[in-house]
Length: 282
Image (cartoon, rainbow, N blue to C red):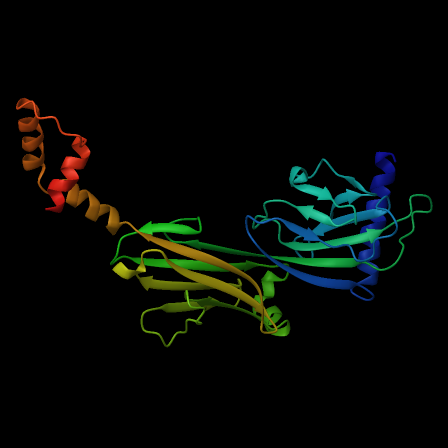
């Protein structure tokens, strides 16, 4: 199909979406965490995928982007290398980022008449991401006594009106500890704040020695069912400090014993490192 025909087809797709609105549209919600792979189902697929079109909108009023046109991947999109079309016409996206959230619509179009077959199949992709004030990864190393703030954000198609959307869909963001117990504002150790405009909930706490390897999880639920969960692990750097202190606690005695042993021609099966460790442990 020529480029002109593709442009005409995309124009028809956009016009059809505007005219039909949400009537007769099959809608599903998918919750995924950043870094994972996702498979978006096309619930209106025909016997093959040569009529399949996938279009993407990040916001309700944003311009439509054609990702798949009549079964063929568009190479003009920035993320085309992470996209693939499944044998069932599903859209596969690798290594999800916070830029991938939005509305994905699967449509079926005939190549001959240029007519849409059946209703739209729309998938709303919501991306859950956790970071901290110390690191952008899902793990941080910080010493006891210092405070850390964890950020959990749900990137969604209707993120501009997050409060109303979460209420209507009964979606909730909250933090839990390693035992799965929900953390609340009544716990004096944690300061929990939420933003009704950006689908974000923060957890602030001062780390203790026993927090080494401790995990906190951010859960997202829809109608009281957990849809996704992202954990954050704390590695205490105090342990590294303790080890360094032990090794250099008595360097003079350790080195003196090694030198004396060598001068006396003493043959010891232990390595110098083992002698040092034995000396410290006494």
